[in-house]
Length: 462
Image (cartoon, one colour):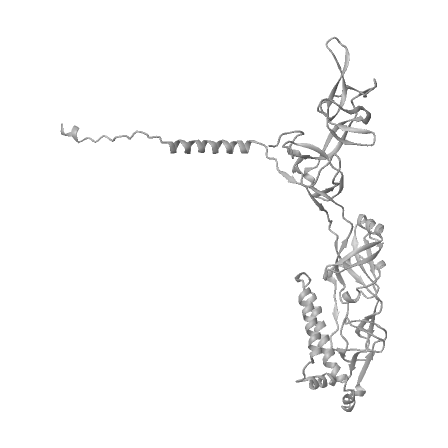
């Protein structure tokens, strides 16, 4: 009796369903259904048509050719330059001195110790530094070295100018017999480097010349000891110069047909027009020479120059190539197409028969998708091969059979895939430029199917 009284039985609470649980269950089921529907239905992505243009890759690394004359030292000695690199000098202007004893450098250092630059000198240096700072591009780091030598040349020019004003002191020092004052043999632009490309012509070009790993530029530095016959500087007398690039045959034909091409220099974004000529070597490599009549002094220290060819570009409606599709249509003579029915829509008079076999005709509305001078491209959804259409106000008949294809895209402005013909002007691997404002084509801001293979004609999108 006591055991029976001590037994504890667990009491189960009844399940209480409230309105909150019902709403949660409905929402959960709805979410599950939406997930299944999402993964089970076709996903069609739209694309808005915009105006645009295509630019192909017209950036090239070119080799600069100039008429450069190398000037050699007549005897051994220490070189001290008195004219800046990239500076134009006249005939007879002092370019450098050649010191056989090596004492002139010590004399210059002694005379300039403690001296200060004038306001005009400082302005020249400041202008050069700011110009480099504003135009510096990390992609062209080698320009740092050009800037270094340019500033050094400017400083030497300013410092040595003071010495030249006191030539009598040099003569009195007893060094005049050991110092040669070397002057420019002609009017031109000074360059203090040699690289072996000075005598290069278009007919000597090979693809190996563009390999900068094998390129060596020998910078000529002031106060260096040179031997007799060694290069001390070079001078470029002619403002005419050229850049040679390597291209394929198609690009070469395009450039030769243009005769003159607008060129952008990537170093400073300046542009100039170059006259086109070409050469093909024994290996079949094609080289294009672009000849200029200005800007030589700007790039006189550069042998390799990056340029962009600014060619004419077609502008129109820019669409992805994935949206383009080919579609077949019936082709019928224009005189068989008329307006009729209960509207002003276009269609054809199709031959039909009554129950007793009497021949009659009915107006069948059809969409025009394109045209030539004499024919229309008609929708093939309402006509069948072998059917006859009747010429308006005549008994002449035409058997529907001729077919042709048009290039186009699917317009989805109305919620379904509506084919629109396009006229491709230009294309690359990703996009095409098509003619705008055509009668059966697209307009700017239309929406089209991004992937034409994802839909069928007249399929509802939303």
